[in-house]
Image 1 (cartoon, helix red, strand yellow):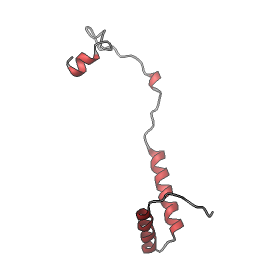
Image 2 (image 1 turned 120 degrees about the vertical axis):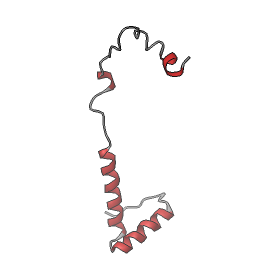
Image 3 (image 1 turned 45 degrees about the vertical axis):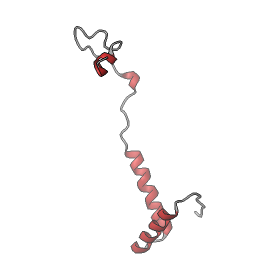
Image 4 (image 1 turned 180 degrees about the horizontal axis):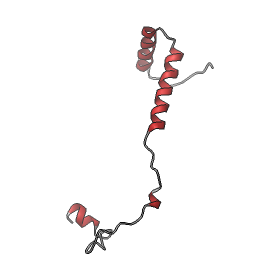
Length: 78
């Protein structure tokens, strides 16, 4: 497919074009490879197995009943 892409950084384009030339491939092949790598990296990012809303409360024992109200005291010493 022939497309026009706007706002490509001139220096980045020069660098990928030079690398493509050194590798003996055309610029389209190099850009396809770069896009594929970027997409694969995005897809591989760790995604949570479950929602935050599915988490169960934890009992930290006696004397911790008000942790949620007193969190500043424990976190910041206030």
